[in-house]
Length: 330
Image (cartoon, rainbow, N blue to C red; front, side, top):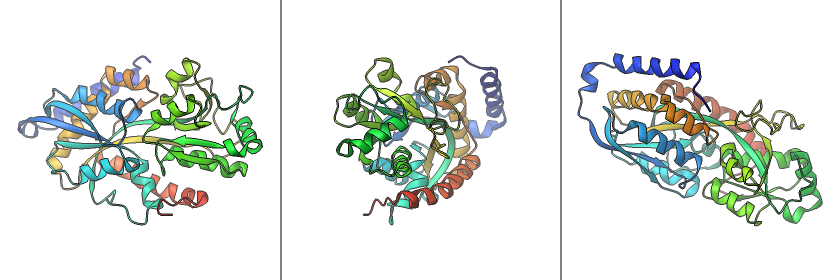
């Protein structure tokens, strides 16, 4: 994916941002390192954006080095808790999908963290759509999402799909598809999308719902078939794959984002410096093109914009969770 005029303009505007931060702020001591924490395993989209951003943050005026720490488990909650309890000095940053912050409050009676009170937003990281794919368990005659749902009705013992975590957006997309077709489409939770895909192409599960970029290499290798995309319009990363709406699933338009956060008591001036460093990292051509290879559109924001986006998505997903009827406490 090549750099567009918009990307060039963004890069220069972010460079201008650094110039306005002020000499005093940038004269503060440069950190030896910054740790970027993700709740998902290496090889997936969450890990990829962490590493791409880390490469461009280090070395900068913010930190000499950056490294990624994968704290998997509990559907991403372990990573959130780890950062919540970290020293609020700007040396530890969380990168997480919206699900852990905007959907989990609707499915857990008691979360071990408060998404708003325990974390401070830094910047949006990227946006992306989801894909729904099937593997060798599903006959080659199944070429669309309606075909798959019909096959599930005829083969209820094999009607299942995997997702990167229970309570994640891909989980609810698959479950809402089952509700739409009035079938019992069983959900299987994994620790990340790649482990789910490996089980799918190995014939252990029928399908996987996950970030669209996670499927690219496997589709190209002929190991699985991408049946549908979740965006309101076709993904530029899978232009030949029809959206769920195109296939008759009215209202099925869902996307998501990854965002960067720090512990809640991190000083505002530190967050300001970190926001500027993250925005520069996200605007770098290598980052934009590298994330595009994973089906991710690099996109930054101010802390306030990220806070507003989380609030909107939290309100949106409440009714959808009720429709599915899923509770992590059940």
